[in-house]
Length: 206
Length: 150
Image 1 (cartoon, chains in turn brown, red):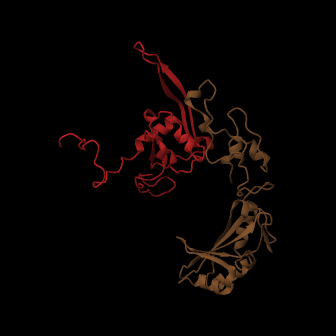
Image 2 (cartoon, one colour):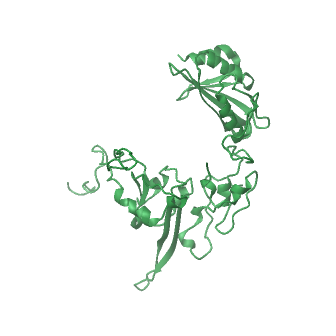
Image 3 (cartoon, chains in turn green, red):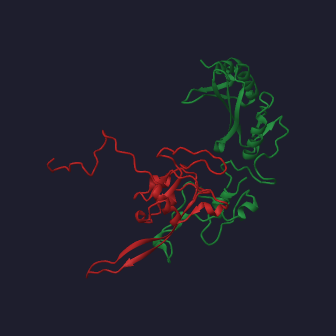
């Protein structure tokens, strides 16, 4: 019996949309309007350990925001999840319940462009100053994929001649700019200019 | 994997890792046919292969010329590699192997790009394959061929 799940269930009633037992910790899907209420209920039910807050891109629907909390003694784990639309990616801040969520909201804000209403300290945390764009959105074009030619394009049979057939890199969306061995593609979209100029900026990092 | 005594800065002797340890990737050049599968499957684009085709003229009348892929460059950039092992899994000729050796830190990023000679030098550190499961498929070297007497 997971006391946190029962606590959130009692507090939210029908606003608890779904409880997915899954294979791991229970995932509770809640209304975005009741986000803070759900976190408060989980905390009141004993889940005082805040592990992380993060998000992931659902594509056209918007973003899912996930919080992992647990009880420090019995180790009852719960994932609380809500969705925000892509057009208006705004969610109430969790810092009123878990103060440590501040850093996680800063990271989620810079990586996904999700606003956390009530958190006025959403400064960049990991990205360099002046970085344009939200790198963990799926529509963000990776400069390193556009700036560098795919090494798999080479073929022993092509030595000296024209390629017989075009092989495309797996996992790279078809509408992304493609660099060839001779000319790097013009990176489209919101890509930091300095990063795009580097020949192989997968290496760029702290 | 260090097996020597404590070093000058006092790091303790490390016990050897298990045989499955993912330390570095070793290349057996003779087994590579330049099929490019590892390069194309690599999610990080960290393998680079240059090659060309050499043609051996036919020695007998009415025979065809034979063309062979010749490896010119094989490099793995361990500053990009995430040690997923897909290249090793996908190699149809077992030209790539895991070595438990992990002490190849360098002072420059370029030092982490291992060219073919350095990749080949790791081959000596590749552990022997684990023994076959006695209840599994019989060892092909000793298995009886169908249609022959035991």
